[in-house]
Length: 161
Length: 162
Image 1: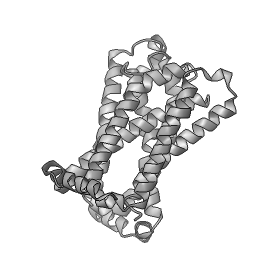
Image 2: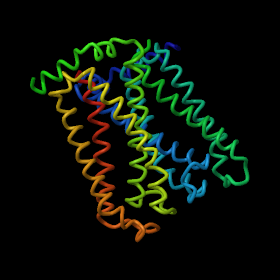
Image 3: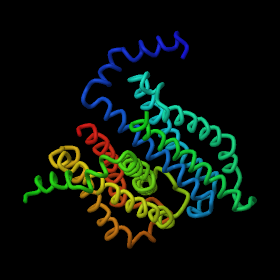
């Protein structure tokens, strides 16, 4: 890693409030609880959209309407997971930078975000009826696989070096 | 044998020891317990948002209940099975943990809340299906939303104390 960037990270991780968060009994559990509540809302919103996309449920809601109604919750949840995730990262940056599951998680996250905006979102601007169902199911399967991989990789950080 | 001793016996039983010492099994079970959150709790809170008028307003509540809660039943089966195994491996430590006890109380409250909804509000859903949910149903939704978040917080925090 670039030395200048590392020294910035190190000084952030030694600031008063980050040290308090890392060393107090309830700092990390609180941040991780935020992360999990955010994960629950985010992946639930992704799951509901994919159920609709693959015509398994929620057929009374059109795709654009469903996406629009879920958007504040999706964005709120993304803010929660990224905010709490950054706090965890700056708490012990060396641990995360050396972790293989963390690298995998960031790669999966990047892929999931790119897929979300480049492919997935496009499927929600018009209704599904114009497309073959198999195409919609394939997009839903890729989306779910990518997002749940991010979660699994996150859990692996605690167990795999 | 009292409950505490039973919990300690359970934690040190051959099966529980084998699971907690397994390189793959414990992470796999714990990971499944956490990654089932969006399917179990997540689907419930999505329906809570509909009850509270905070989302999914353009469609009938009864269809949403049918399409969404079937997944949460599957999610809860996974949650319960993995939760029982996780408890086995840490029963002695969980016994007097305040967050574990609070989590159980929260789950009891949520169970009662669900029963009240099924008995009082579910049979009359047709009357408000396309509209705003009645006040009592909104209270059930709000209680469910808040207490489920509490369950997640307690579950995550208790693991830090083991």
